[in-house]
Length: 114
Length: 114
DNA sequence: TATACATATGAACAATTGCTCAAATGAAGA
DNA sequence: TCTTCATTTGAGCAATTGTTCATATGTATA
Image (tube, rainbow over all chains, first blue to last red; front, side, top):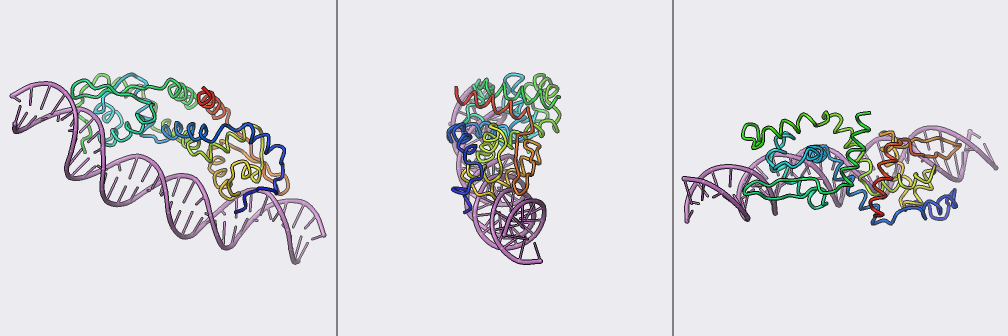
């Protein structure tokens, strides 16, 4: 383990940056949101839901994936409270549930579109 | 494969959403950036670099990780052009190189901090 | 040139991920 | 109740990921 403990080259800057860093839990929380959007299939689901609510079957059609695969991904997004669902009879409708994530997506969309 | 091809429930909405979706390459490109920020170790490196340039050894100290592990992560961030480096003698300094990523981080930081 | 130091790299490994398949659940209609 | 349909769930698997360890580069100094 070459953990740079006492042989640091710039102790002052290291101390300063250490002080400015968010708490580890906050870092993990941020990373979790990014991870939710880091898989193209999952990101596509979120992008599709920017247009408003869709049922699982429709999302599967839009994403060219099986309903099972979509359902697994939706569970991850639901756990992270990025989407919420509402049942109407046999059909379950999903919508985006996190304004902050919507902003992140829009910002990142704007960038990709130049 | 139960790809919902002809038994779609809401064909009109599906067609509308399909039309509004970014190109697949754009989705993949967006996902790549999110993926870069999706690992807590890598995100911590980026957060540390918000404070300005740091050498590998310092980043290792800040992140409590080996220099080798940090170097591997920095390579990923370099490949994605999220960071850039400059060598001064034996020491290599890293800085953030993508304003868009910096904005994403700031936005997400603001959210975690409420 | 020889040594020491900062960083980079490749192989290898455990852990995690996203998918498939089969089976279960929940709701509506016959 | 039995069947059908939309969705969910669990097990299992291949592929990917982040780390470690050992080794290689590149740079400065003796």
